[in-house]
Length: 225
Image 1 (cartoon, rainbow, N blue to C red):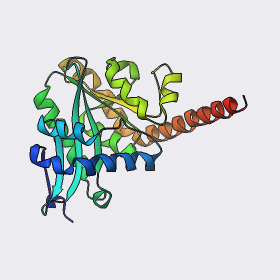
Image 2: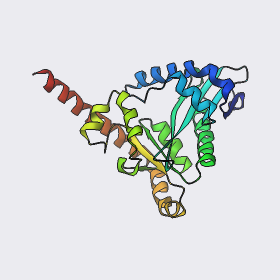
Image 3: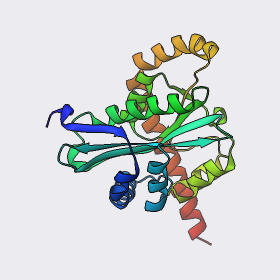
């Protein structure tokens, strides 16, 4: 299938028919990766579509292919492009990158002064984000909005996040700052990240290995009592 066989656009009321399929695929994808994302109900996804805060991809014959939505935190100071998901049969056509580009443009249009951030365990998403101008940051650079962090409670690795006082976990934090000052200061960092992304991927895998082993060790210790 050619990339131009997909229709990628802001979602609307008529796309609510795909909401249940989207939430089921989000859950299955999280299980397959062994990580978690904030669980969303079909009603929540429908609300995002009705608000014009989502991007959906379908085939020309109306088959659902991919989705992503916008969440605003800290009174709009921060924006997250959340829930990126592509149907399994369409994961070899660069669709995730196209959706990320569209949701990024929609976010910039609706929230031009907001910082856009993401938490991800996927190297492919890191590469896409890097191309859009994101850079890796510490968790402390993200929103302190408690409602956002409550979303991590549905992740299987939430105990790691809590044990690190919300300063580290398996996910990599990435941030796009639209301010002129940030853009100027981060140019070199973005270039270095792109140049050394394979090294960064190895470091990310090592971090996951270490944190998961710590989690397993703690679980075994607790089971002794």
